[in-house]
Length: 183
Image 1 (cartoon, rainbow, N blue to C red):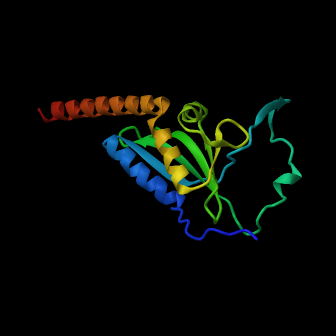
Image 2: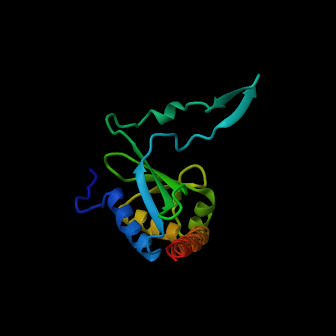
Image 3: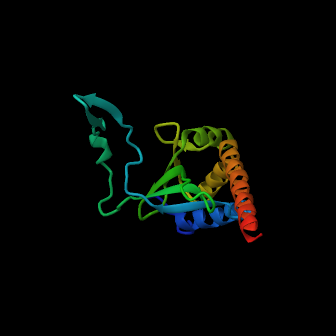
């Protein structure tokens, strides 16, 4: 008979994101904000756009019966999106990843923006799940290390720096305009 472990204590994914996100936003002086919210759309499906007499038809692919075998009833998978936005540029939204997990929380599946995923793969050795931008994270420790790698990758760092620079420029422009109106 298998001996089970009872001393494992995984932190909830929401708490890991909150803690890592708080540190990230402090490092950007809150010019760049991290948003973690529930998501209801598809996170895995690749759609092929086909046009037929002017109508767009979305093809989602075939279903595999293996997807249903071994599934736990009642373990509703929750989906979240993780994206960056700016306090100065209201319409900015750069989606970094989708997360999916059930009541057990781990393993957690992360579907990551492809350029970020490629850089994260170079930094960490993680279990890829199918496509090269889909990762399976087995514990809160793995998830935290994964998020740290995401937030330190060059693609994200470059994007964040450009948002900070543009935000500072817009703030300066607004201050100058306000100052001119006062005088």
